[in-house]
Amino acid sequence: MKKELHIFFTTLLFYTRIPCPKNINHHPDYLNKASRYFPLIGWIVGGISFVVFYLSTLIFSIEIAVVLSMITSILVTGAFHEDGFADVCDGFGGGWTKEKILLIMKDSAIGAYGAIGLVLLFLLKFQSLVQLTNNTQIPDFGFGIWNLNFGIFLLFMSAHALSRLAAISIVFTHQYSREDATSKSKPIAQNFTWREVVGAFLFGLLPLLILAVFFWQILLVLIPVFLFRFFLARYFQKWIDGYTGDCLGATQQVCEVVFYLSSIAIWKFI
Image (cartoon, rainbow, N blue to C red; front, side, top):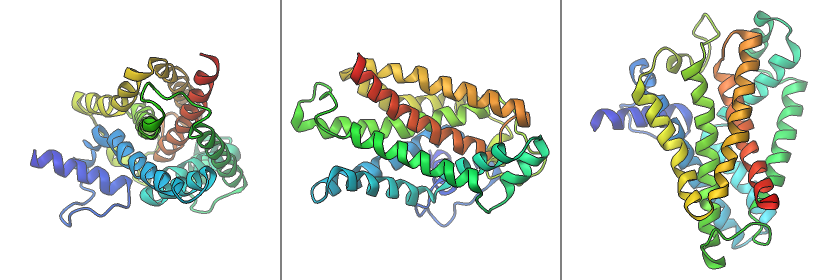
């Protein structure tokens, strides 16, 4: 148990800005096992974002509450995944060879592709969350209107957990691209066991499965989310022969937005 707690806090330290015990560091042995808890970080980020959203709705409009929840998730993670998304936009937008793409992604400066990509990403995320959290636009999941916020809470949790599962699953199926140790995900790409795979899928799917108890159709979001995961991984493989930490961050952001958009489509047409 003590070892598992150490692995969990290592994951928390690596992927968030949440304070951890002083004896926790980025030790490679623990980071190799950290992938099992990566979707669990989604529970924490999604839960904190929902709390901020709910409290904000008591004072402000839905739109302001959504913006504040988005800011919260960025602050909690230190824009870890958004930075990866921007780097991928710049790298694959401006590079035409593996070497050039990897070189651009290593540059800390953001380019036109990255800036445009982030603006469009945030617009999609904002608009989809506003529609999802509008009580007149979504079903009550069988909870009744009074408990509708519990359904929204599960949506936040599911989106963050499932998108992180989609991202970390690339580590289980593809090779790391860089030949040096410059990537932020290099330590977790070295090796993994069945414990990492089982743990990642358990924590990644559990919030969605709980939500499916009340609204089983929500399970259909798995199809578009993992389709996008598949095509992104294939695209990365084609151009850079694998993945980098930035690729994982981009996958998480894209799959999170795909989750929101797919949920809207399900409730509208099913």
